[in-house]
Amino acid sequence: MEEKEIKEAPAEQAEKETAQTEKASKKKKEAQLQKTIDELNDKLSCEHDSYLRLYAEFETFRRRTSEEKLALVNSAAADTIKGLLPVLDDCEQALKMLETSSDAAAKEGTALIYNKLMDYLKTRGLSVIEAKGKKFDTDFHEALTQIPAPTEDQKGMVLDVFQTGYMLNGKILRYAKVIVGA
View: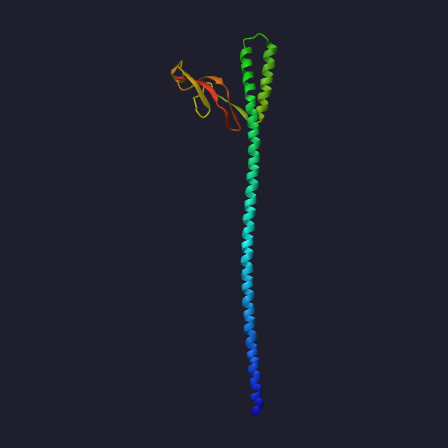
């Protein structure tokens, strides 16, 4: 019987060693797989972060280009309206000259043209800078000259408007050229 036990002992020992070797190799494989999983998770999070950054950059680019297009359209509109300001000036001058004229048809026709043009430009955001009788303000007025004020309360006030000023959508398109009381 002892021989049987001796024979079994090495067999049991061999089984134990095999089981330990298998456990060790399983742990080694598990460690390698866990390492691979961790590496892939890191790579995935890095790629996700890269994707989010690229997406944010694209959104910024898209917003910036749309703002630039809008600014370009507004700039073109401002340039076009700025080109029409001399026509408005000529109409105003014609209306002033026709005040003393007896030709009612010329007055009416000129006023009609001026009003239609002004109404159209107002729909596009143009507004007149009211200056006469207002306090002189360098944000809206350009002083051509100063003259003695007829009364004390007219000092620093706009006495006359030489050229009408205009604003387009809240921005100065042309300053009003005025004469200020000193």
